[in-house]
Image (cartoon, rainbow, N blue to C red; front, side, top):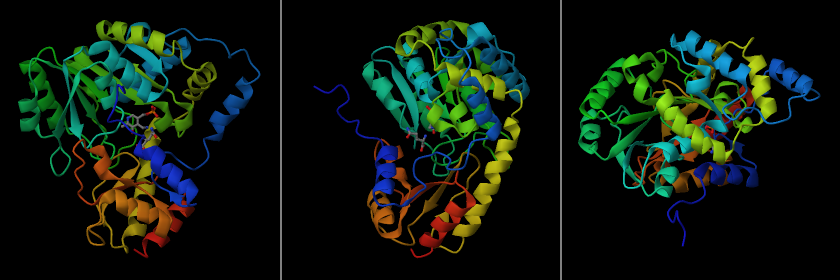
Length: 375
Ligand code: PMP
Ligand code: GLN
């Protein structure tokens, strides 16, 4: 008997495979198609012949842990302890999995805000805990009334994702004030804050859980070097958590992967000396604006995009097909692969919206727009 009877192949795999099969422009799965910074590839080339190929300590390569202390200090003015509060993980995905396995017990509840990214549910189901889906408002802001109603003594964790995949929505300070109030009413509630797009925000600066000292003792933050340095295939990220929670998360990590691949840890540790994470927002804002301008003359209606490298658009003016059918037809008839938003909802809500990844070179974005013009 399957332990996960309702979990199938991820939509990102399905759409990327379709894009390859039909030779379509792939704006579905979220990954950049431009070259990685030469400074980073030069570091990797140099390291390949050095003595960096054996296990690192379980929680991470110590110089990398120290660099993350500096990065967290620079970005958020928060001081964390390298030994006690940081863990290098095999991507954000492993950090999220290890956190849920370590902290949630059978029959406890975990709040997920829909639409939501796909990697939260399976680890909850595997421990016989209960995912509780709460819908975001129509503008994708958190609905604090519904969140309060859904929270109870059994709620162990609330998962938040800011900036938000797929909608590009970001949290405001007021959202965090509401979250703080919730944790006063439910003192045992723990927060898992998925911030893999923390450096990709546009008009408004990112408001992080790291800016909220009242929440530090009950929060786990998740970061991804894959997203921040255009290296999604490296699968490397990190978790920051207070020592009492981190102690438990490390126990799972120890037997899930033990340690993360060494050369990428050493390479990123060196790269962090020269890279400027704060320029990432501007870089992607230009891509967002370029892509939005290109799509202006199509029949698609663009939703706001405050962060991430995803643009959501409504195709309600073009067709009333189910979004999955529409995205499949976009691949086969128009040669552009996208992601249907209904797949981010547990109840499959279909608002006739699709997601584009604009982390692509300008030529790719222009060619895709030309094809979308024909819609
Ligand atoms: N969380 C969100 C919101 C994501 O979009 C992704 C996909 N990159 C992840 C987690 C997983 O990140 P990683 O590839 O570092 O495991
Ligand atoms: N995070 C990526 C996205 O949203 C997908 C990563 C994956 O394929 N697991 O497109």
